Length: 250
Ligand code: SF4
Image 1 (tube, rainbow, N blue to C red):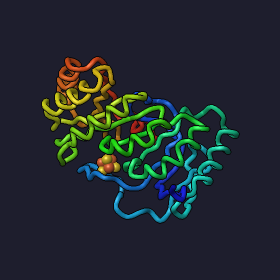
Image 2: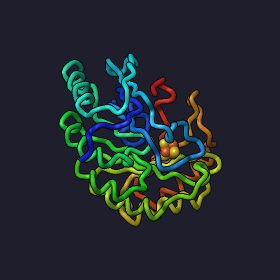
Image 3: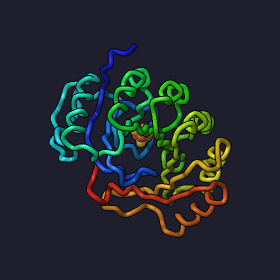
Image 4: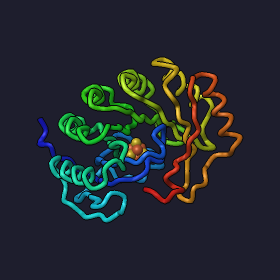
C-alpha cells in the first residue's frame, strides 16, 4: 500500500486539445516524473516539484501553491466541490504527466476513488506494460503516445509499445504520434504494424507538431503522404493538431 500521497505538478480543468477526446473538458491531474527524455520536452522531470499548483475554480486559473506530496483526500475534496458547484462541465479526468504510470502503486489507490466522480483517461507514453496491467481495470480511456526517433531524438521502444497496446486494448484506446517534416515513412509503417499486430481497428492520430501560435511544423503535402501511408495499413487514421494551442488553453 502506498501512503496515498503523490508529487503532483498541477491540477486544473481545461479543454482536451489532443486525440480522440479532443474538445471535451477534463480535469487534468499532472503527475511528476518521466522515463523518457524527448528532445522537444518542456516538462521538468528530474527534480520533484516542491509545490503543486491547484486550481480553485475550474478553468479560471486561480491557482494556489500547495506543498508536495498531495494527499488523495485533498484531491477528492476539491473534486467533490467542483462536482457540486459546476455539475456536468467536465467529461472525465485526465491522468497525465510526465509519465503517470511511474506512480502506478499510488494510482492503484487513487483511481478507484477518482472514478467515483468521473471516468478516467490515462495519458501515457506507452512503454510500461506491467504498470498498466495493475491499473487497467480502473481506466476507461487510454491515450497512448508512440514517440518517433526523428522527432523525439531517441530509439522507439517498439516491443514495449506492442505489449502495452495489447493490455490497453481491453479498454477504449487510441494511439497518437507527433509528425513533422523530419518524420520518415518507415516510422509510420512501423507504428502501424505495431498497432495492427494488436488490432487494425485501433485509431491512430497523426498529430502535426503545433507551435504556440497555432501554426504547424509540417507541410500539407508531407502530412497527406504520411496519412496515405497509414491509411493503407489501419482502419481509422485521423490528422488532429494540438488544438489547445490555438484556443488559448494550456
Ligand atoms: S514522454 Fe512527455 S513528459 Fe516524458 S520526456 Fe517525452 S515529452 Fe517529456
